[in-house]
Length: 418
Ligand SMILES: *[C@@H]1O[C@H](CO)[C@@H](O)[C@H](O)[C@H]1NC(C)=O
Ligand SMILES: *[C@@H]1O[C@H](CO)[C@@H](O)[C@H](O)[C@H]1NC(C)=O
Ligand SMILES: *[C@@H]1O[C@H](CO)[C@@H](O)[C@H](O)[C@H]1NC(C)=O
Ligand SMILES: *[C@@H]1O[C@H](CO)[C@@H](O)[C@H](O)[C@H]1NC(C)=O
Ligand SMILES: *[C@@H]1O[C@H](CO)[C@@H](O)[C@H](O)[C@H]1NC(C)=O
Ligand SMILES: *[C@@H]1O[C@H](CO)[C@@H](O)[C@H](O)[C@H]1NC(C)=O
Image (cartoon, rainbow, N blue to C red):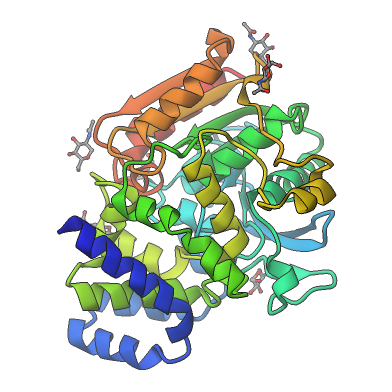
């Protein structure tokens, strides 16, 4: 039964690209069928003004907020939001220095602000005296600029998480370092945001700019993922097929994923909460209106090449750069016939690391995290803090109502040591 549902979802995922144009009628039908509740209507209206994260999600709660922009070496113009202090009037917590929050796949900086100010990490850090910076990776709605390419060119979408690690991260971190008066930065990543920092640090980059890194749902190895849906997707080379069809951008508009999810929900009788469960695990502690807000905004585009790269990672026990699956092409890009490996055991031993992961997580699953911990088992114990939460799945780490107490407080205790 579960398998049949997964297959149905896959077929729908395939048809997504083709139905984007014609899907607005379905969406209308869906909305009228479901009878949008007062709260979601209100949220939609409130987001549809699309004023950017500062206006829609930060200033309304009384926090200061600034928009910034940084250009990567390969020309991508990334937006950054800065929350330089706590709620109006509250400066009692002093200056704890800059912290950069890096979102995961299909998300942007908004992901850190989905719950109320007392529950979401973005606000909590600001209220505790941190100078908070929210990164937005290339391809997300506020980071679609490029010095020479348009986001409607397929060349714009010619990147995978290799480039996020090699260009986005160093450019962003360097910018924050300069803006913050040459103070070293604490880093918080979720999911793909952990993979990129681990990859970069394992190549000895960023280390002299970072005070520490906190990894929520750490991802380096993916080949033990237990989700049937994800395995089926990787097995049939879902990403590759879209790539070869010439579709460079997965989810061309930011409402496309949402439309897709709603379409899936409509056709399968799942509600979206269940679909989220199917992919991310059984999240214990989400508030349904926050989930709706997340689905309305936080689902963002990525490149098909990135999905292909992640599928390669899922199918292999090795963590490598993007594999062109062609000796000549690998040779042209890397000077060797095979895709070069990232070697996690080369992460500097005394680099302060905090890892928090959940038993119910289907993406940063316990076996893959255990594999990572084994590979870095020589890491200096005083500079490695690991916590495993029995009830938590992938989304709980950014959206659970009690994440503040269970994850963010220990995370700040960790920061305080460095
Ligand atoms: C911040 O960025 C958003 C999104 O690009 C934009 O709509 C808004 O006008 C910007 N605000 C400021 C103050 O620059
Ligand atoms: C949020 O936290 C602040 C400071 O701890 C507290 O004064 C306030 O009552 C809390 N608000 C809610 C809605 O819980
Ligand atoms: C976190 O919240 C969930 C749901 O509200 C609850 O079931 C769980 O026991 C809480 N965990 C802790 C450790 O308080
Ligand atoms: C969910 O969050 C909203 C907004 O913060 C709040 O008004 C509502 O009471 C919460 N729902 C539950 C069941 O806690
Ligand atoms: C990774 O790096 C370590 C330490 O530099 C080295 O001993 C090991 O052989 C490397 N592993 C691979 C697969 O290259
Ligand atoms: C832990 O990290 C700090 C900061 O990088 C470093 O100064 C310290 O020596 C490390 N501790 C140990 C025991 O290696």
